[in-house]
Length: 521
Image 1: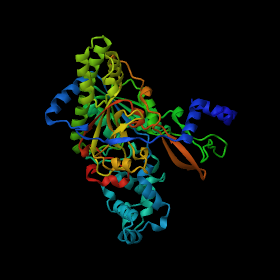
Image 2: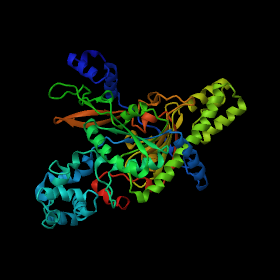
Image 3: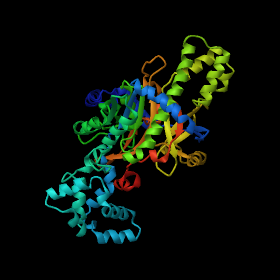
Image 4: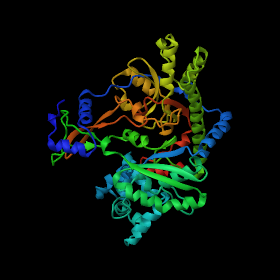
């Protein structure tokens, strides 16, 4: 594609985003050509890609991990850029049609099976159970309104107005991590605070905890000020200090939008339209951290203290397992580096790769020369490593663990999203439906090599695993491009280990009524 499709204004805009014409042109070609579907070989299952930690292993794994904590190797990485607007989509819909927000209408529609009205009724009837209730009642009171009176007189619009809009708490426009999620006797907590507490318990080196939050640019100052205002509560209680850092998604990872004819989409001011590249762009943020053992967990997957012990137990065990596998890999890599590998040692290496790291060894490698075998072992072992917790599938939307076959028939463990599968292929859809486990975004990553050097994580991305989605702007249809997902294509060429974890470790909050689940009460 010629640069002539871009005028001087376009070129200046591309440069201002720290982007390049070459990269933008490649993105336009991706729109034209699409992305190949993932080729599923079979779902991962227990003893076939998914490992279960035996009860007898926990003490050893936690001891291994404790040594890593004492050596200041750990960091929590929390993607927290999401706004809370999706949580309140239902309330927004009703709030935009005030005539429908009364108890008679809601009850009538609920009885007919209207799920939206049933959810709204559930929200109103249980409003005092939410951790943000006191704040909502106070902001109403400060404006001369009484929440009990409003409920009794079916004036639900005022309640919703003061909860989600800037008339009151403005929850629909805040980052999700800053909303009150959980009630405690002395202080109701937000997800940011729950992550601080988690960090103290499984990511500290006795006197400090390192946590990194990724944020949207518009929320950065607000969140920093908020965390600065609350972290002392937990530092005073635990006698542990926090080292908290922040980053935003780089503008250079935004991707160009195109119209339905794959021509660069422009807004009313004739500017090119770029859109955030999805959570896959966060591999750049991860790559810039001076990390070693990094925990990755979404901002909304938190529980009250009464349910945290299981999370702590498995976080430490999974991290211990990662370090155990990493140490073994490093020992073999050092032997290869020192040229101390013979056929017998190579058989041990291949056995470890096959049985512990689930690395598929092609038949042509097995019958090749010793040097070729050693080169293959070195290449496959000298990669970042991740241990991913997997829960039993209970119908949650999202990715799952699969054995995936590439164009050379090489098998690897991957987390695959439904959108990566050819829905017209019955064989592929049947494999997808037969999956027994689900990815709760519970990852622990080892990002340094056997010589202690930081991997360049950009070298392990499968750039053929992006996503194209339909969007609109200014009333016109456009196509948007998402980069390979953070735990999908962005980590495609990592060594991957799947371990089953209890369902109680997965408690996301996607809608406001999710906070009424027992796990959040």
